[in-house]
Length: 535
Image 1 (cartoon, rainbow, N blue to C red):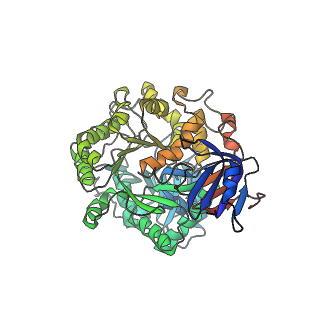
Image 2 (cartoon, rainbow, N blue to C red):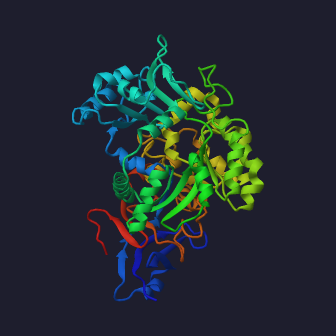
Image 3 (cartoon, helix red, strand yellow):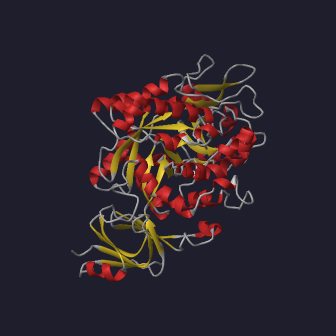
């Protein structure tokens, strides 16, 4: 048998425990057919075989982002970028500039504002946005995606006047004097507003996927676990049907689609190696940034605030039970320690159902765990789907509002040592899409500028190997796909990334300088850095 593609001439880390390092590998079609010494793999070279010379560089399996809002990221590339703005005024000026070139009456979207960067760290209001654009309905998503900032015209179009009522699990922030909606919606109120506004058409969504995939390939990503909704799934399906889906997608199901999924007989794992139905995505709480994460004890300095819990009482158990009984695994968003405990309790109560089905429940984020809950994930067989850059972005907030409790925050090392499977991702567009940035954060627990010195809660740092494994085998395991993906093993998909440096030997502080030279997905080169020979 002759290969279509042979990769040789460098160091290849397979992430396969049976054969962790090889010199070369051979690919036929979309699969790896052999790995081993260069002299052995040479037998797979025929007249039509393309040979990629690594020229001494390093290759690893293709990286998978295990928690991302991928279409939203693609769309965000066309929206007002508010990441890093240092005041509401700066955000308003960016909106004003976009409004000047946007037809009157058209919705103006933006994302990324973070009040925790502002002084004082207060929520903004609609009147600030009215000054920038009274003739465009303006809707701006916060960095953590748990709050919306709208102007008066947007509120009127949504019917959110003084008589509007909060929903269970959501809140309309109001002016203290008049009781009017002040222009910020939290949690379920924000989600409901976005649903009413609606999304772009399928062609726009497909273009967003293709554009985002091009950037993902440049970063070494060959797959994503997408946390979005039916319109996004339809766009992925359209591209797959046309044979143009550019990367592998494991698509989570939103909670409000559970009934429809059960009626259709959809189950976790349905699909192929390019597009597969995933877990049901549900929420147990909000976020740290919006102070809505569900806590066992109040936030430091906020004696009456323990956050906002979702699916309280027996509701979470009932959702897990119903989904699991239908063959749909559950992935639950949980940030605060109380939310994580409630999720673990629900998974424990329903374990006979999901274990019998061979399902693997997940906790998305698992940012703060009480000491008594750290061992429970491994004991139950729950995957921790975590995002390393959250820790380095949030550490100052975590210390300010969680105080001494942060010893159980973003506890990667403790979870690993307990036997928990980690699957790493980005939560992009909340954080950067770059998996190398995530690996750097996991290994150093520092920001790119080196702060804090020595790393935040450094006892929870992990090795480069463990971080890469969480982006490869761990992500595959979380999706029940470890037999097909996650390592460079004969029979598995031919996804790999070529790096400029050996990240397993390089000093951790140099990780952010490592370049992706080449990305191969399904045996096809999908990214080639400038100046790198194709063969």
